[in-house]
Amino acid sequence: MAAKPLIRPEAGADPEAIRAAALALLARRDWLTGELSARLQAGGCDPRATAAVVAELAGEHLLSDARYAERYVASRAERGQGPRRIAADLASLGAPRELIEAAIDAGPDWGAVAAAVRRRKFGAAPPDSWAEKARQARFLQYRGFSSDHIRAATGADLEPD
Image (cartoon, rainbow, N blue to C red):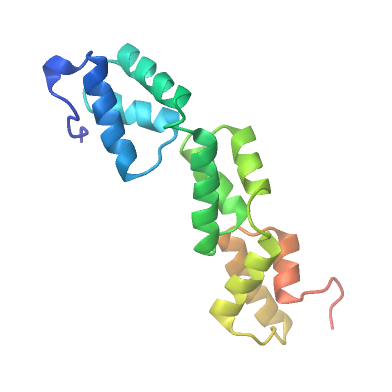
């Protein structure tokens, strides 16, 4: 299924029309540069003119991959997702690895996020059996938390009871 045309076909190489379409998209949400470029091209914009407009928008700080990654990490952390899952999602969107690592490192205290997610799902009382600890650990692992975050959140020590 083709994307809805963003501009008239005769204006596909017009930088002003491409800029107006890009700004209309940016008014709704942030985009990665590659993601915005692909969306504009799918909407009927000329690839060379699109690249120039996207570079111009990035130069004016209207489009920032770093800002996008930081906001993405913050919003997903508020939803209770862990750093591994967020990093995988950003990578699938085409964000560079260095950018993902910087945004994850600048994110919240992941141990505290894991503990809050565990409390919200399972209640304030810590798990009392290994079976319950394992069940909660699987849930947190699915959410994208590392084993260190999971151990801290569930109170799982390395030695069995």
